[in-house]
Length: 193
Image (cartoon, rainbow, N blue to C red; front, side, top):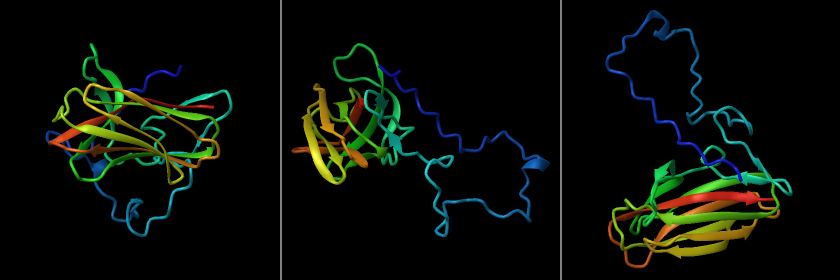
């Protein structure tokens, strides 16, 4: 079994108020901008630094699905969470899901894939509401291939074939009556080739 994912580093973009600028930190007026986030940015090739690469799943191998190899992770963060009734926190992926406000999606892209995706899901013990039911979906190349509903104290496993799949999404959303928000959890996710 692959080791549990580690906690994602915290955002260090905030400047330190006690720091002072040195001469080497001054902007160079002759330098050209390298920010690739602008509207005229050139797309980065697959595997470029800072971009997720395509996942290859070989027969007989197990590939862990984490934040590091996610193509898109809208609303999801990696950290320490606790499921209701558990005695200790676990490393998991979590996303706050608000009532009637869309979904949280996590997408993985594959260069080659074969085998089966297995995703274990739950709700966080510290969710705003313990009354909500969440629905988790696996969507392979645009088609829903598995779904489970999970109440506050439940866990469930979704499984689906990924033979020939190029994009796999894990989707979480509220289902039915809803109060405040809930935190959807993915406590384990992997492809068994």
